[in-house]
Length: 345
Image 1 (cartoon, rainbow, N blue to C red):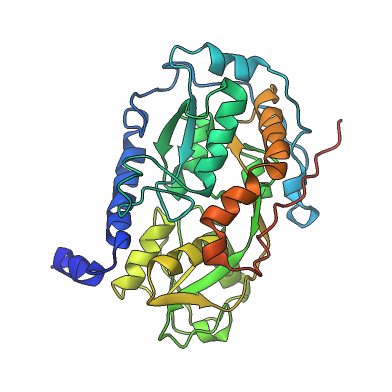
Image 2: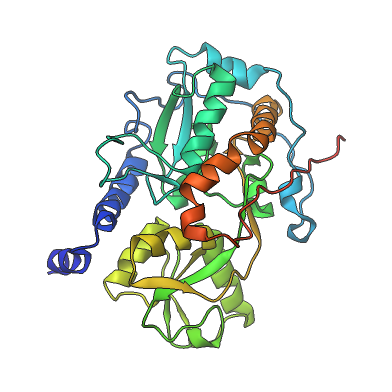
């Protein structure tokens, strides 16, 4: 019965149905890590040399004091972590990504030229990092990781880094290291075109709200529900592993509203003309590249150097190709965020 409903709801939706199936596949892949990968080989914990390091004490972080500015200054120098990557038998970066987010990290089922290759804004950045560190933009082993598994994948040494629309905040800085920011966005509401929802406001009364597990959207909803920032009759549904799962629930009539990053919501609205953004962005958030906390911060510094160069040459081209068509000409995300770095101690 559920299968028939799913097929009926996705019929005629082009790539969305395929993306939804890929979403389920991503969860299976994550549960099977480290044996299942998107590359042509697997690297387990301690297998082919996933970069490791001892945990470093994090600088003091207060969300109101711009946690995106606590990354170390850029450097083009190698170090122990980068040396470990270069010296592994399979000389590739191991990077956690999404394979289901339209124009961020996905496979286009309607584009036979793309084949099995991942493409999108985050994927372009991964290739730039690989080219800088290893001299080959294709020296990457991609691993599909659900939203809820981004931090565990880093902490358990299953990936060198995660490039997956991941917001920098203080809670996460206690668990992983972040690069300087490479994208600015904020939380936004997505709902059917016919919905009477007008945004993150009282129109959410009685609505079932979907969000992804371990996402900043779910954290905000939970916090607002606790202190009255969310209308009391709104129902915050149990979170799902991937944010795209929320779009499927919306399509099946099992949710009324999705709350997720505005940039992701815009891409989902581009996939499905029956849904649209409601109201404006109601938070300010910055995406960063997440890596393992270590006393050797050479990899973080190197990524920051890549980003410093990428903002000048590469960022805008990638944005115009992937995101400008869905975000529009007046988006606050249309220019890369300025980078500031923590002061030496």
